[in-house]
Length: 167
Image 1 (tube, one colour):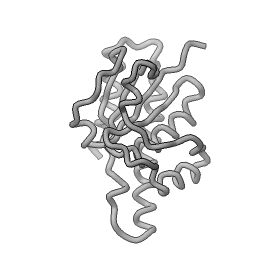
Image 2 (spheres, one colour):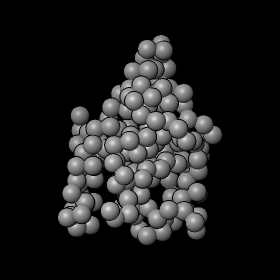
Image 3 (cartoon, rainbow, N blue to C red):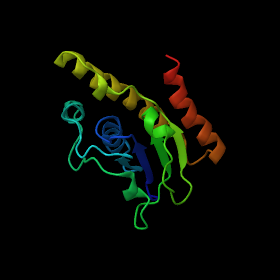
Image 4 (cartoon, rainbow, N blue to C red):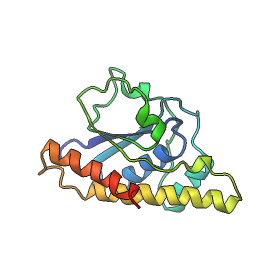
């Protein structure tokens, strides 16, 4: 088997959406992908609601932590193939230099951590964000990456993000 694709999910705080995306892709990627997550201003720890959502979906939350995107621009960092921003703030920030010119796309997802309300409303917001991420990652995994050229892959990963924004 060829080396797995390295994917980085970015969000400002790296506490919810990007953490959930990392867990989903590592669970569903069947060894073909290694997912990571990071933030421009990491919160220091994943949100407990995100961890509960991951575990309630039968996925492992072991090793998940809130970390800076600087870890992935360091000389010993893994070579990244894809970078997805999952929050609008991170998409607008000036990112560090990523070695290898990874393919990038923005998959904006509403911030469940910003929801105020009852515990049920907050849990629903995390579940909804998880569901959108799971579906987008499922579409990404269905792409025949080995047979598409770079421009076709870029169009498809952009389309995955845009198709959900139109809903």
